[in-house]
Length: 483
Image 1 (cartoon, rainbow, N blue to C red):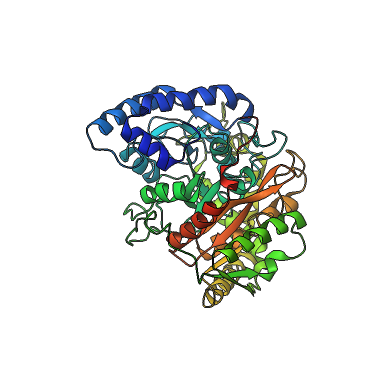
Image 2 (image 1 turned 45 degrees about the horizontal axis):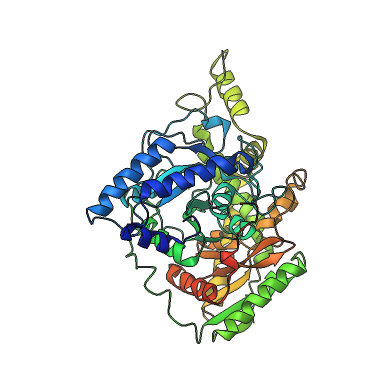
């Protein structure tokens, strides 16, 4: 059953071909078999999962099921889940039991899904390789010597290894799309404000966005139907009607205008990845799309702008973790200053400390205008590039990441090289646009993703474009041999 899509599982559950308890137990068995090696989960919740599965079966029998009722999912450990440890991949929150439910997980709970547990991630979502977790690195199921991508690496690995039917992730600068590309799954970052951030532990508040990570665009559409919507508890959440994202999946693509940014096919892009992307574009031409070269001239400024804005917001957001109210507290502090210093010094990992220091510097008196204010001006210019491009094209396509997954530890001492891995994904977060990665091919036995970007609130278009590609290709159906 674990090879079935969400739509297929939904039909099987409603037809009585399998119960949610049986399905959930099969996933728990797979987690028990494979996760000691993969390290995708921080917390597994077998008792809760089976209890929710039993309730789902009763709901299905009573005719009160939603499309996802009874389906076992897992959540990135950045979402607060009532009564379950929510660590954000950090020692700082290793002892934190969330007293409330995030809006995203509450929506899934209300829909009758089963929560298998919480997934590993880079500490406080800071990283692109999932090597920065307090709980150790996640392994890529296609090759356990390789990274899975980050920061939602646990989510990507769990879906790719069939340890969960689908998973939630968050994307601040590519943290859904990049691991989706490297693990061969579909990942969607919605428009900023499309999905509530309430109860999602903040990294960079103007960039963070939750989204679905699943096997296919159809599965992602089913998840987004539950995730998207207005939430009065989140002041950044847009009060805008939510369409049925599955309703337009089968619309033909004839006449679709695709833009290829010349800046995305320049130095730094692995030539083999480029060929995979161009082969995928050729498939779209067969489906009736037209292709033209466009320019996003501020692309080369994206990484610099992001790594001023994101650390600045992180330094403010993480100031709440001080050892006083919750989280890690040092032992036997001599005074309040010692409590602050040692609790934060012991609780945060090196990457988080680096970004806090960079962010605090950028916001400090005398440097705010030189760095943070200038980065925000660049952000507006990056957004304007996209708006101008969308006057002539319907979607923008290119590589999700410049390379396939790389060996664990190979870039640990080169933060610039690590940061450049997000060069094609960061711009959509800065502009608040929706972006999606779909499996498009393989390089040396490792998956490669095609990135698709659409105008604001055009997630339905993204999903339609991704789904039509997946109807004529089978890259999204490939699975690692070892699992």
